[in-house]
Image (cartoon, rainbow over all chains, first blue to last red; front, side):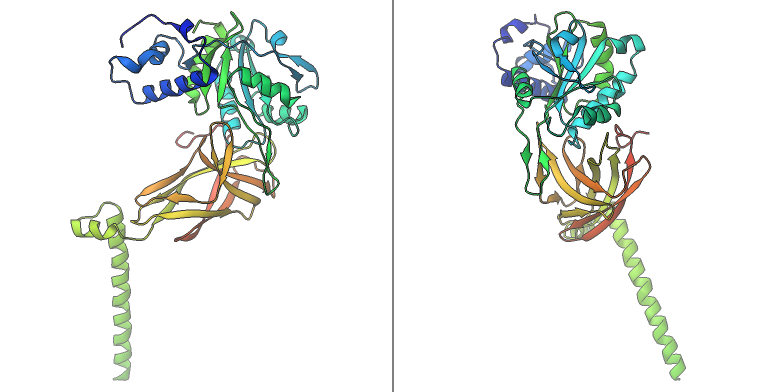
Length: 226
Length: 169
């Protein structure tokens, strides 16, 4: 792999959609194994000289300014509570049968492989996109299956949507189906914020192998630069 | 005389049965690779031959909203479609496809000839609701899979750990 200087700054102005697209491209390129040479390699190179297996973000999103309610029913200010801490952030809902429990379950498995000291340095935050049904108690019961120290937040959906949008994640209002069931939106990605600057540096698309989380979590806990 | 005729008929019936069994064995041999070109050529028009493998239900984190995953293999030369799934142990089983950020219900799923339909995490899956009894590790739920051509295949699907993947312990 040819090595060129990373230029994440040039990507700063790119919109969230562009970042997500780049991430998808990076994954595609990796899957087809590159082949070596020249052109479509910018994002891949950025990835390959990072110690992380997750997708390195060109745009470092700020941690959203989000005040909601935690699973004990207390107010929770995301920026304040997770200030200077490694933070994994996922938007989802508990009646989501496939992507949400798979993603959070895999993070749970990887978290259990950390030493207690490492684990203490990482906050895993699940923000509900279905606050109507995801009460603090419902969230707690659901999260306990994956990590009893996982943080669950619920509250005003407008705030949740705004916070997600700032991260390039589109959350829509829950839709009531013909048979009375409700379909909500979940994020397609987990964002990892580093303790050094409280900004998002890594992205894990849904479908990320649990081994990737197992590889990256110790680095994230240490706050290793991406 | 009459008696011996009767015996003869019985013997013929026995021979027919033996032939049928032989035919069955031959078909199985075709399915596993065939021995000659002619057999392979006719196999391309054979009806769908479905089997279900790797089925599991991850234990839902809470409540009765579960996903179901499985693979339907088709060793036949004609495609089929999964058109309905039901269960005596759950009031609602629907087919869904996960998109980037949500999921959509689908009415039917193709099982291609000489191919497979895979229901897997992050993709097409079954959504199982209204459990008669809250699922627990080690339980088995009967799922009745109805296909447009083949009819209904019933499978017992085990409830596995939340993060289980086929091929791992």
